[in-house]
Length: 256
Length: 211
Image (cartoon, rainbow over all chains, first blue to last red; front, side, top):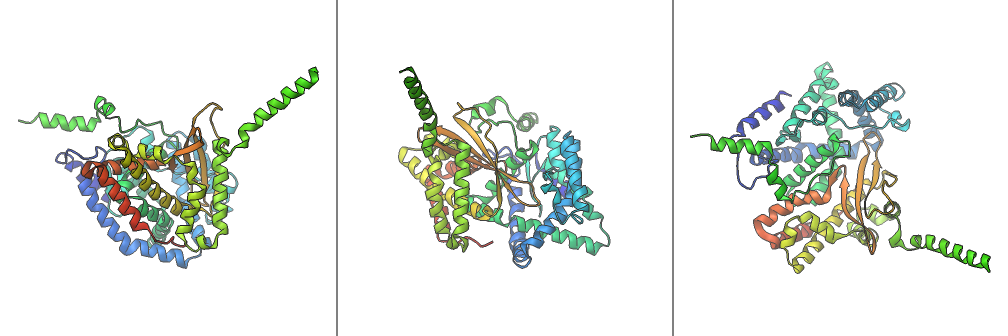
């Protein structure tokens, strides 16, 4: 967690000096981000992807499903908390009902009986809650190992990890085993998606960044985001400058 | 006499009501998406060669069954944004062809990955008179939030055509816009055509990975 915050701070400090003409306004730290992206890609190619591929081959789909359910069930508690924080009480109650049914009837969550009962799984986290409260995403960030994020979502992820029940597990070797299993499962679930990204993108970094930003926007509004203006209307951009851009312009004019 | 004309009028009315259903092209957009999706998924499930990873055959299938319902000209124009107007007719044609090839491959991979999942076809929320609608389908996967797939469709003379697909809230067309603009800025329209062509060639002959 401290790692993300530290990074956010460093990146914040760099804000002053980073200003190039053709840069995407959503991604002022592109060169730094690209560096971290390349690093993550190497780690993924060397360790995470081979591990996940082997896991997918060796472990039967049935068992992988149980593992996914088990960790998904643990996650439902804070998904519920986030729904309550966003004022979506019905969804929050549904999440906690899922937790109750799946932990008991579903044997510690390995069976997702709640979905069959009509309690659908949701996708919430602290980053989305902040977004729902009106916090802007801030610049795009690529976090080491964790990947695509923004300043807002990075802080959200820090809280997600801090409250994550798995980090409470003792002894440590059991906790690390659980963390490792969860990461492997998550990466295995993304194998198809990452291959499609590989095939679809001309520039993987840009494609993944834009997809991430679109996806988060959609999640914050639970799939019903208000219609956005077409980015091609540059005239609109000039009328309503992003506050961040304005600040840096002011700074440029003030000194000397 | 009077009854006869009444019967005639009734028959005409029934015929008129039935006519829009007669042609494939006039099918309602949500019905069209459902029919095509289920048909394609069933064909994939039945085809041993595709199951074994024969991508060329899957691309062929998509070409025949899915592509007629897409408006690639509109998709390319939307993905290009401002750049589209700078392209001449020949460039536009080539851009559309290359983008179409790329999208078919991507679509083939996605279908191969998700064809074993269950689909939930949402009822269309639109008026009879609407000419631009969003058809919503959800891919249900055990233990995870359903993945929404939204088809943006427009009514044309040749029936309803898809001009954008949103997967999990990510618009395919919008996602290409920055990439395309970057390439056009650096190396012009021809640079983008070359770039897309190279990308498509690099994917030729690759096989679908088995799950």
